[in-house]
Length: 224
Ligand code: PRP
Ligand code: URA
Image (tube, rainbow, N blue to C red; front, top):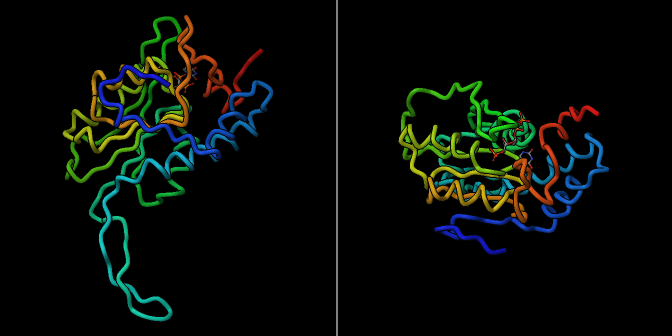
């Protein structure tokens, strides 16, 4: 994989066998919606697990059934935000909030106009201000990073609220090189975490070889 990105350290391809196996199930056009969702959940779990390795930790004192000991926990003062891009990010977000039940979930309502391929807003309820932006960690979730238009809009929301780019991670199950490049052109210090980077986008902005329309396949809205 060769990417002409400014900071290759800010892309992480989580090509774990479990991730790739489930991505293959998702790619297969004969996979029905229920199995597509199951594979999405498994892949999302691997990816979210790997993406949260930047969370700050602190030591605490606890009692095990045997002795008192020092142990590690995620710093309770850190604000963790799971930000799914609707609608395809919903399932991803369900998995992430099962792994981090105390995180805040902030839905981002964007869809991509089919003709212009530009993102269109329809829902945004993120707060006006964050109490401690430097101690806020954001995980933006979307199964697909294609042209990068939706990703850039979502990242902008948080950067405009003074959250450092280094604290924002964009998680996509599958990405196109064009999308990664666009994100890093605008936000070189936002890390993109993905299971795979495909070859290219077609004339309709679809990732090739890809998996088709993630939202339609997840919610079984592929009308014939
Ligand atoms: C898909 C996908 C991303 C976006 C990616 O959503 O889930 O949000 O397209 O494309 P981009 O990188 O070119 O912006 P879609 O707009 O189809 O909406 P949906 O999830 O509601 O189906
Ligand atoms: N959105 C999708 O769901 N699939 C693509 O290939 C591109 C954008």
